Length: 162
Image 1 (cartoon, rainbow, N blue to C red):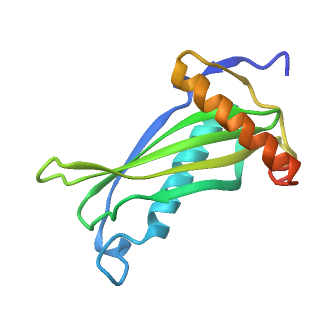
Image 2 (tube, rainbow, N blue to C red):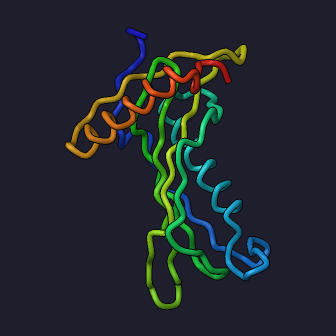
């Protein structure tokens, strides 16, 4: 791992947006939670791949919390950033907002934490670059994620095998 670069959170963070259409609706007329979850996983995976510069696979969705519904016609934005890196794993946090493009009203609809493992060319876990922490918020997120990672390992979860 000594020859891998050390990266910042900003090096891999990203934001993706998508207009929610009737095809995303559930029977209640709101956007189906699964559509939001898919978008969250896509944003998280891209963020992890940007950090590792390797293919990454989802090994865990540690948390996904829905605070309010998303309605058809709203613009959903997922902002993803690395919280923690292990030897081969990367925890990514994703914040989801919905915007009514006609009124400009924006709401924080949900948040999620996901864990990915980087893969080498043979599909085996591969080392990932380290992470430089530049702010107090990044240090707090790192420490909380480190504790979650240790607890998960102790329970036999989040192994380095996809």
